[in-house]
Image (tube, rainbow, N blue to C red; front, side):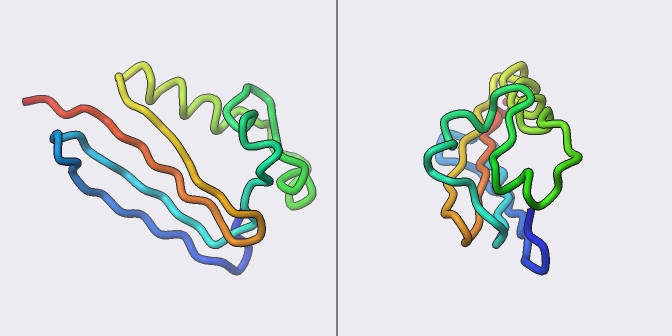
Length: 94
């Protein structure tokens, strides 16, 4: 959802030793009013539907479930028209 925009990926380690992955784009962003629903199965934000009406709405739902099954977390911050940053934190094995 970043047509003609940029996507960046960063990997780091938290102070507690967890792996932290961040994926940021300069795309369309997620409207604040619909942010609570973004991880629901089959949900798509209206502006995402306008960009690509043929997607299924299972990507973020599936991603969150897989991350949680591995005892990780996923969160995001987004500004409409400016982009979104997803942060995934995963425990590491000592």
